[in-house]
Image (cartoon, rainbow, N blue to C red; front, side, top):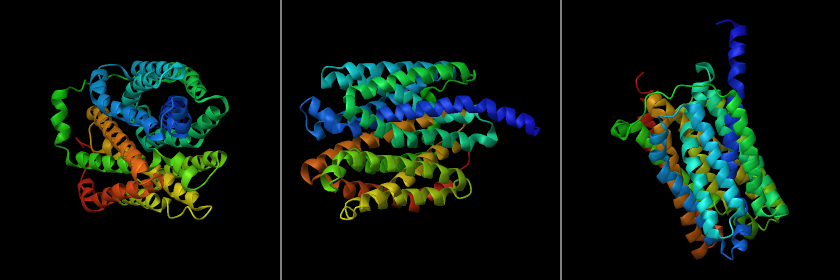
Length: 399
């Protein structure tokens, strides 16, 4: 292919990938914002922070329960139509959350959002890889993961700032409005890809025999559980243990996201040549950051340093894990394999949030880093001692 043709192909790929990245940003902003506004949401309904934190767990468990059945049902639908439907459901959930008069209705609206989340994160990475040319597949995957980092940089802090200034409900109104713009952009630019062969439940044993895939799933549960023991309560931790004022907490959360961008950059440049070693390093970094969170609080820059390490390694891990899921499965299997990945990730989120709440109520919020770090350290051991051998000889199924 000539350089001119290559350039035209790259330019045609870019708009739908950018809009998919923006959609990823919005999905993650909506997921993360309740963490940044947890204190205000709890106060609005006269709840404790751990009581309001149940919203995070219920959302995560709903994603876990819905990911596989919704993705199997949606596997017959053309990608473009599916993405637009998902964003429509997501937008409806934002409106419902914004106007809900009771906490129970807030949770119900969040379940609508969870249904959209379950499908989107099953298809976002595989669709991005399909939209891109083979030589740009890693870049496409990196862009989707970057949407997560940008949500931490701008989405969570801006949503928190907007919520503090105008009320937490306005944050969800704005997310819903921007979603409509992104949906229009995807309607105009997303290519009409074929739906491919539907994936039925009868084919699930194929995935169950994939030992490398099962190893990634185990690591994902340990990672997400440890991560969200601490991250679900990072706002009260920074306020009560590190003694930070509201404005500084917003800055620290922004720094966390900026560090995530660095993690995306490192992934794009290092992962292909050092897959297993890089995955191990990211898992070790997350464990270390969590375990160091409380010990570093006596120093002014200590929590910031821990969050930088945390952000870099967390974003890199997400990209590594998704890349490995896609690599060890066929194109027909990848969307369903990713739906299971997303579901298990959210099992970890829900479990981590529950454990974090129990830690807050018993040991105090200052212990969330230690407990989360211990769970993540178990994942580090599995990555170092077991998973590496499984991934070392695994290639994409069918290759």
